[in-house]
Amino acid sequence: MVERVVEAERGSGTEQPPLLPPVLRLWLGLGSVVGAVVVVVLGVMYAGHSRPGSADRWLVDPTADSVRPPLRYAALATDFLGEPLGAAVLLAALVAGCLLLRRPRAAVLVVAGAGVTVVTATVLKYVVGRTIHGADNLSYPSGHTAFATALALVLALLATGGSGLGRAASTVWVLAAALVAGAAMGWAQVALGAHYPTDVLGGWCTALAVVPAVAWLVDRVADGRAGRRQGR
Image 1 (spheres, one colour):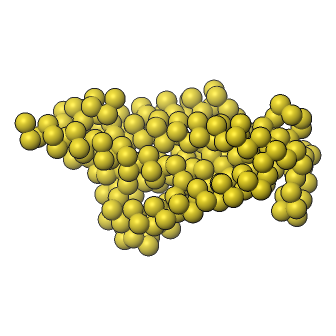
Image 2 (cartoon, helix red, strand yellow):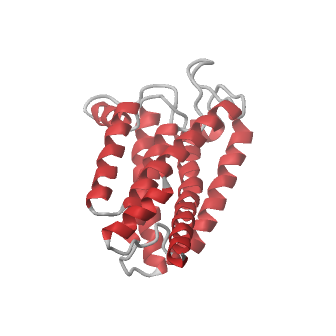
Image 3 (spheres, helix red, strand yellow):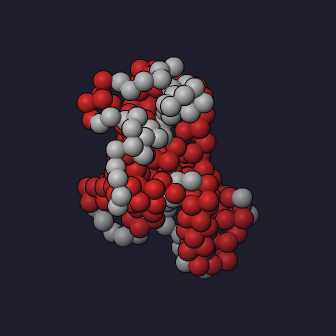
């Protein structure tokens, strides 16, 4: 797949900016490590639990539908974007936009960043085994929140590449985008009684840990293949 991306980039005649800009590598790398640590710590704390923790109860009653129309409609609409159909539509639109802009590497990141994040969150659900509303409803971390945050991170990274922003401004922009998207989806999940607040935090940190690593890996593989081809 990455080899096809390299060919597409060469054929487009345009220079592809790195998915993970150099000005962001240090801080997002640290953020990725911190995110992974938080995911692990929360996972250990709530492994096998079926009730909200003290932090969850302090924030809100996380097992009851806490919103009524019209806010409930907003929560349901936000939740739909994390469901299979809504997520597929979002991914298809973003991939099409990247390809129209002749940024095939960005299209790979859209799919890989969101995909690896969701897979990681799903695997963690079974490893941690935390439940809500019954033994069949695995809740930690929130996959919906992880997906929304991952897409926001990807879009923010793509907007930052080649923008000329400094390290501080770029870092604030990327993290703010992730925070807004994660907070919106997280609010919907807690408001609808689908997740505990700490599940939402775990989902946000899962995306924060995964997406920068995926972006760096795609850059490294694509640049390596392009360099080998130029050396032939």
